[in-house]
Length: 247
Image 1 (tube, rainbow, N blue to C red):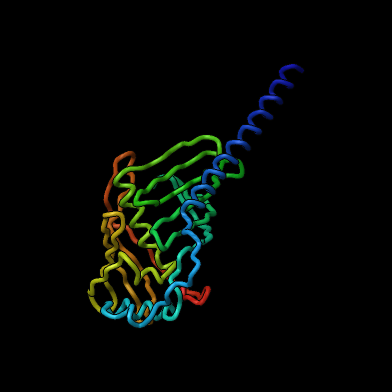
Image 2: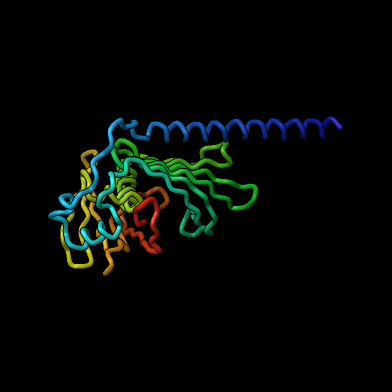
């Protein structure tokens, strides 16, 4: 009987500890989101005008018109919710996840927080972040134990490339500060973006209507502890009108 009581007490203590640790993890993430947000503005921002498109390659102008940015104010902050599948290694199975991602479009930064479940019991909490020119990732098991983390120059580069590929969520930024476009042909353009003394480059492809259909660049990934620079791409489609923009 004493053993049963002790086991029950141990389980209860473990449960309470896990709740406290998970709450601490979530509070930490919420604090990082709060710092990431731009300060409230007391004046309305300038809207995107035809002059902002002058000199841009033709497919980029076509995209910005397609995305319906003309006459709209520059987006300062964005939040998206996602669901999908993720894996922790190329040899591991895909597992479902849900996530929230927050973007500062004024001072480039993002925070992606996700929860992935391999089964009803096992949950991984992931935080991917780019802030003040630095990238970082943290993975936590069950909200209790930090199991992986990554920082450093390669992570900074990888995070900036990710930010560039996701600027389609707030398309007014694609004709904003730090952005320089170079013409390639009628369906593609080179996208150069400078932030925090770093410049990265990708290639954007557009369809006949102007929709941005892919972004391709060179991005570091971790290969069992070794950073490897590889071709990395995202694809887009199924555009919908959200908040007056085509996303």
